[in-house]
Figure 1 (cartoon, helix red, strand yellow):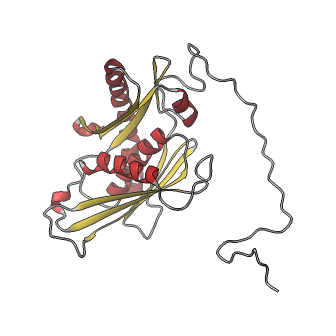
Figure 2: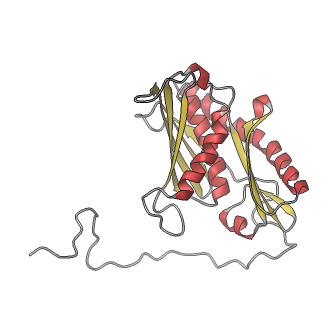
Figure 3: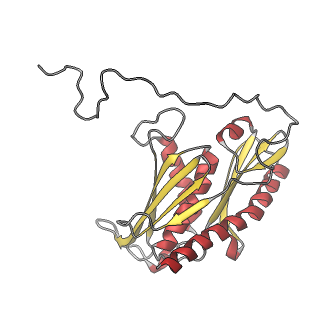
Length: 260
């Protein structure tokens, strides 16, 4: 007789299962106003690992890792749009999906409002750099999968960087490579590339994207409470730092070209 609670859509575990035991570090004391940042300086960003060409089925792909933030990106196209009106400029579609295990709290596989909001932010950061006027009635599809998330600000910045590298890997003509950096105001101090824990204690966050080679800003997203002076200070700090991110993207593409 078949089990009544058996679900054929899932891989069920054994009847006798035990939770895995991890050696967790001791809980850190909560951050107090006036104390310095733990682990790195206020204007330091997390180390970046970036590589391209990992997904063979895609026209271009990239994988980025910044400590606990891990993102894979695939680009398909350009391909002709079907059942759409003729347009002199092509379309750039960005779809972001969080893996169910990517966050501290398990996410449902269905896309929600946060997925769409992140997709819109990344699309606006990239659309100004792609020469869509050379792709009439065509579509570029970018699919971004967040494997592990350690702060939504860093996720958006890293996803934009990975998408820019994937577009270049696909041979899409662009005005320049898009780099991105995030900042947070914590206790009146500017911290670059905040983690999820740092974002929770901040009063406001900002994400700046642009093309450093052309000294052009493509997108600015700000949330929380910031004074105008703090906003401009965050933008200046991000603009100084994302030139280093631009060098990482260029080096990853150069290594890929040498390997070919």
